[in-house]
Length: 506
Image (cartoon, rainbow, N blue to C red; front, top):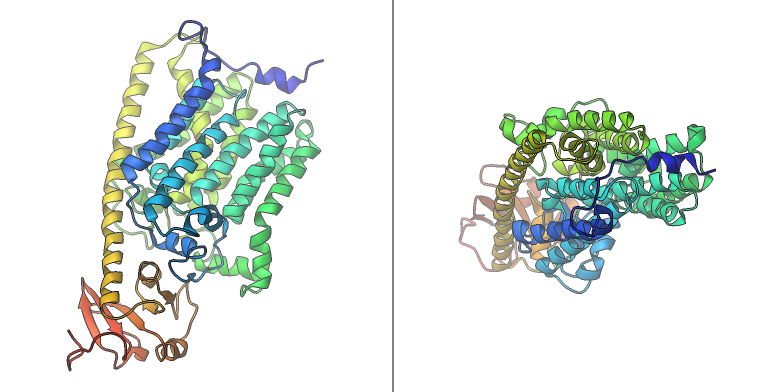
């Protein structure tokens, strides 16, 4: 007798016939998914551009495997997956443009593979639309070519959930079981704690629901998570983190202390293009910017109703559950927001939402519903216009900030602060990378030094403190010549660079 799971999967709604002569959606599915993935890569290169400089967090990750600058302090929550992913480029080239192109192409290929992991679970049209919905978000386009882990956690979540559902439906599908393990390892490699949140519904389902029990699936999930997190756990003991429990505790402290803290409004504020909303103050964005965010839970409910009505709930409810657990800590357990934190949730929602939308615009016999189709098309067109507008503004603002860091690095070089050198103070981490220097902090989440250490370092290499025009510099900079540049106060340790006038000013 055929496996009942396969019977349920076979009940998926499909178009009544080929959309072009002799060619069905199923036949054209891989090619159409490839078109979506290719368009995603092209959009990154055109709309974000290879010339955008590295951001704060990017300089931390890239510096671990780059000859351009010394490795920045690697705080407890961070994992080295993204550093190793960019190593093939950064180990031999300092070109940011080359790194952007590499990541854009790699992220497009990864999106293709993640969507293909869902083959047989949904019609090709659903996968194409789901990929387009996820890939057209300004957040996805902005972070796809960046050396940041969140997009890759999202890809691991999307691919892993698809492989999990396929492996359950067909216990002989060994490729799907291997896909579960690889996807879980990718997530844990990038962000171990996020991986655990996302995998929790899968573990619950496969352990506690009898008809879902598959030893191979349990082993694949646990083995993948263990392999991916092995380096992070080992580092907790062999480096200066004080063990796994201490590293987890320190990671919680750096994130402001994990606990009940509703950050929904903070995430809404970040949707206007704020890459980090901490502290998250100010008015909420225009409702047009946030409308899609409020529509997501409604569309998720629609998708669930469609799946239950069609008697195929698992393939929709499982990714919805994983999306909920992926979003939960960033909506309710931290006191700040960054839009990239929710990328895994958006990826997991994309395919169920696409299925719900296509159900709205097609009749049971596969025919187009003109009125519903027109309304959905208009809504998606407005959604795309908002996404690209926010993306354009975000890229322009980001470019300006990072060009400012580059100009400050050039000014420091002019003042004699050249490698080997040390920077401390405001924005010292990214500016140090641009200048080819080390960075140090005596307080905050990146604290890795003391005033005495910085003073001793100044005796044998150039050291600079980056302050504000009105702020008071630390005591250890007393007597250091000061220079004003672009609203920044640069305090240069004596003996560094060209001579200064009696007042310490150029």
